[in-house]
Structures are given as structure tokens and as C-alpha cells.
Picture 1 (cartoon, rainbow, N blue to C red):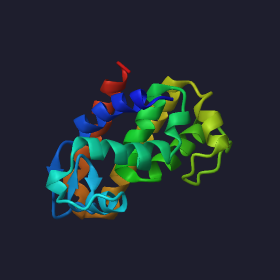
Picture 2: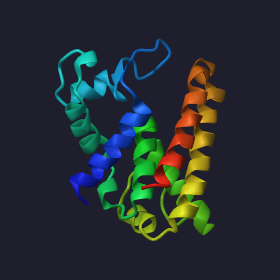
Picture 3: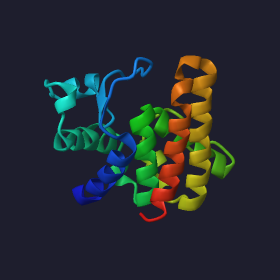
Length: 176
């Protein structure tokens, strides 16, 4: 899968992540384009977060979220983009929820829910019917966000944005 594919995915990331933010209740702290300061530092960026360029952000997203989670090996663009979006927003839970969705669709445990996009998970992601997967996956994503708020009321301020993110993604991937 090409870098050109990821460049198209990055356009979506910019749409949902926006620019610079620093909200007191955001557990990610200071971010730009959805990249936390901690992640930026881990990938060698030492400047002010407000000055992080799109090019640097794109390199970080591609390395940390796209390739590290083997989403370049997921054949269907809609499935790959949807998982990428959730992984960016929730870390390994994006992969865990993909594994849960696969097991739910097959009605039994066919992949381990371990947050690692290994050979078995990739096999099923590449053979599952995309529309069915996305419907189940997006439902699990919504449940995940609601559970965060149930467990930590300080995160309630973000719930509408998170749920809207899923809706935006569903509309966006219709044209992918």
C-alpha cells in the first residue's frame, strides 16, 4: 500500500483533528493536529507544539499509527481508514475493538482481543465484508466513548465531539 494512500487518509485526519488545542481536561495535554506533545517528543520534534508543521505531523501519524498498526496491510481503504481514526483517538483500543467486531460478526472467537494487529487479525480484516464490519465497529466505538464518560465524568465535555467524530467518519468514508 502506498504513501499516496496514507496522504489521502491524512486529509481526513486533519479534518477531524483540527489545529492546536490545550484543554485542561484533555488527558493528552497540549496537541496539534491530534499529535500530543509526548508523542511529538518521542518522534524527535523538540519545538513548540503551536509550531508543529503538517509535514511533521504526517510523518508521525504514518509511522506511529498507520504502519505500526499494520494498517498499510489492510486491503480495504474504508476499513483501514476507520481503524486508523480510532487508533489515533484511543491507542490500542482501536485494534481491540476491531478484533471484538470480527469476533462479533463471526459469532465466535476467531481472533484474540489483544490490541495487536497480527497475522490472524489481518487475515480476517481482509476477508470480512466491509459494510458489516464498519457498522459493528462504529457501534463499538460509540460504546467505548460512552464508557469513558461513565467511568470519568471529567471527560463528558468531550463526548459530543467524540460521537460527532464517528458520524463525520461514517459520512466521509462513503466517498473513499
